Image (cartoon, rainbow, N blue to C red; front, side, top):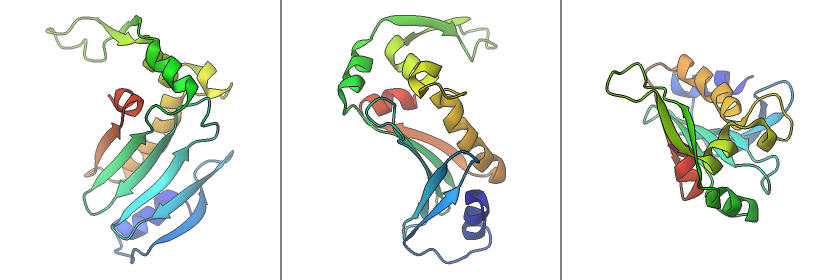
Length: 162
């Protein structure tokens, strides 16, 4: 069964939630772990293939609180400290530019932006980390339209979550 089918069984069909760990395939090219906590929180994905050189995240589904949660790890590695220190600003299109009170461009911390959006931090994979995360989180939101998306983290992770 896919991770989404397994979560659907817990969230909609009321299947019992017991602490367990199983491996489920979320994509054709890599296996993801699913960890179910007794509280009903299910961790469906970890992005930690190369934790010394890439950002680390996890995605969970909390059926009780109706949440899809994306959590980012904080600053730990030497590379993370260099990302934090790359504090020049880069101008990007404002996703809220349709609002007449918003500027068409916004300034973003270059290190955080590059870490999340540039392909070279994803070791040559087709997508950047943002696309990778969205590719996992959005199908969950589509499956459970009454769930809300939460992004959180500490330190570097807090910056990436915004």
